[in-house]
Length: 115
Image (cartoon, rainbow, N blue to C red; front, side):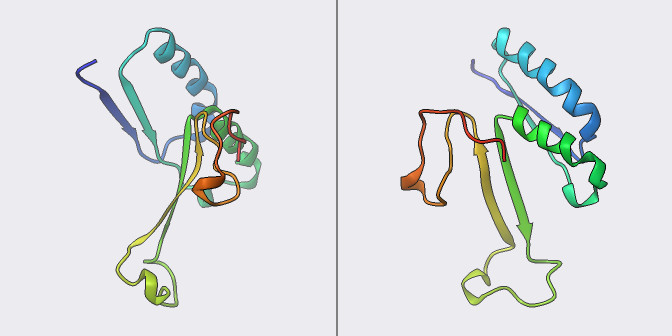
């Protein structure tokens, strides 16, 4: 497709998405829709009883990223991070497992772990 639709859902409701996302992804994949969803969730604001729901949502997603900003830290970041605003970690990519913490250790043969 020449065009891709990108949809951003900031502060996504975890309980609703854990039910709706599998259905939505199935529809997108079966119809081969050119659609990209970006959902933002603030896991530190969720009550402990919603942690299993968050895990389910991570398992359903094709990619999971973790952002850590330096703005709220009380101590300054290490000197090597002084020009950065934070760190973006890739926790999961569909059909690409990031194990061992180094790109040369990654594999594309199996589905990635859920967390």
